[in-house]
Image (cartoon, rainbow, N blue to C red):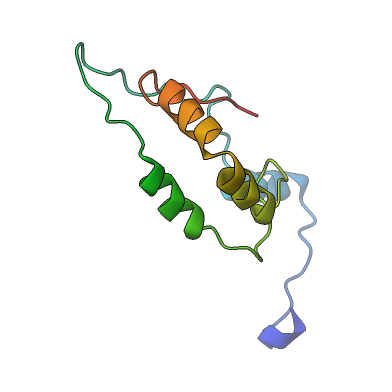
Length: 103
């Protein structure tokens, strides 16, 4: 904060003010995730190809922080490279239903 060279803000002394600030900065969202849009009857979901998977894998950056799952990107890339068939099966199981595992 010292590098911003602005005036330092005073700590709010009112508990009500603090609660209003927190509520404005961190609004409460729905507790349940939104459901995916339903597919129309007879809709065809195109298969994910091995080439698409390889291109997506190539766009994954190695030296970035892992996502919420904590798995390093290098491990994901290695897994896709060594067993692309498993990833293709998972994607083709998830895409038609629109349901993806939380973990």
